[in-house]
Length: 75
Image (cartoon, rainbow, N blue to C red; front, side, top):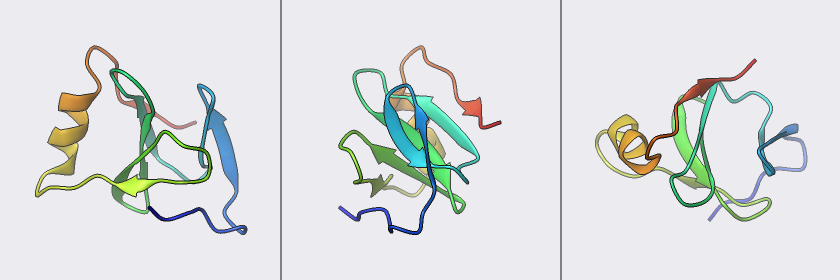
């Protein structure tokens, strides 16, 4: 699992730190946050660590993993 660079500015979303330049985010159905950063969907549940969402269609993986939660646009 990669770590955020010390140069990456982070913002807090529902208790989780994600890059401030993320364009979208969604709370996981059970834990963690999915966020779209640099055109890729990623997931974080542990402070300062993230992983890229795998698969040929990461958007579908995220939609299937967030339960009733919605994908929100970052402001």
